[in-house]
Length: 272
Length: 261
Image (tube, rainbow over all chains, first blue to last red):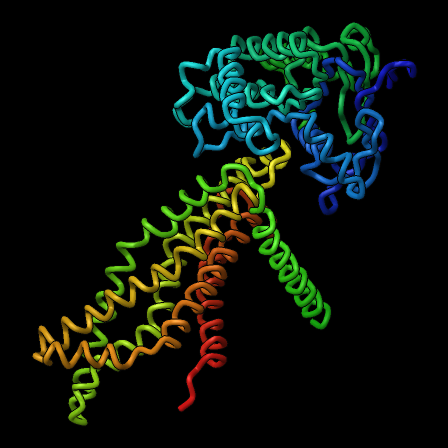
């Protein structure tokens, strides 16, 4: 695995994170270094534990072993103050958006400010409206999430994630279920707001082309470990077999389909 | 077999501990929670106002049946004049708190367990946790406070409607003098009976909401079921457990508060 240079200002430092569910080992010693102000994308096939990894970071799932350091402070069960500080400075964008369906768009965006700060109500409203305006949702502020399209819900979730002006945003499959145009739009939004607000972003996705364009660094999660971490350029040039398999999957598909059309017998990876 | 029994016992003890922590946290988290008043009002509407039609209908029919049965039983001994006593004490001491609580389990309790289960399933509760909000203060505390405020009132409504039902069947249908009926009611019900009624209502209300909220909130922890099935299983469990616990608590409270002659 390509490691980042040691003199980097690490905002998140993850070492040896393990997680298992019964006999199923999902994370078998994850190491990841996240420099401050960067966009880092964790790539991997479906079911490799990317979301579990992100939930371990967010504290939704408790790792069995390992250490997660946030801005120099270890996050663990005994360090409640560090965990609370982490939550105050971090936002999480869920794969399914996790919007509260009984609240309007405006109420959803205002919720983290209402529940976690002592900001006056008027300022909460102004900041929430501003976040909605930035994401072109101000006309839909009184609608409920179920009355919004999938893309709008994603933007609403992003508005809720940035309204607290977080220093770290965790994105869990932010483009899942979106068409290519909206997928590009979401990545554009992430990069745009990352530049605007300067937060550090950790994304998990399997959208390779977009991730390589939008990220400062990429990492590949497979077989419970980070098999690669480096720049998108290094990823493109890497000869790591797992990186090659993931990176060249579209070529592999093209070859397989061509062989099947020629009437040849092909054994897929799943069958193997 | 011994191992399985031991494991089940340990699991039960652990769950009881979790439940106690969950319930106590729901009370303590309410202190200082922002905009909790608005959420309490909403919970009062859901647990109280929306349940009023059911409470009125069940209360009326309970009173009607009590009046009818009571009249013919008392008639055998020539004591129809005691119909008001029978209906009022049966309702106030026993049937109103228990039946109102069971109606509440069926309507507000099941809805609460299902709502929380779905919120857990769709990661809404996780979202609250990751943003640093107190899930107990936001989701659970308002329901507890609303239960404390609303259940005694609902039980009182049930009792009053039930007494009116007894009057309808006893006096209007079976020609017992209305003055005899109402004066028996007036003389029979003592302040300690009303206190017993409200004590039971408050305890049943809290138990119902706590059990239903606990099961819905922890729908994801149910072994052997996930997704929609976990929500349905936790809702069923919440309703069954609440009903049993209400009846068991009724026996315990009655045995503690019963007025010996």
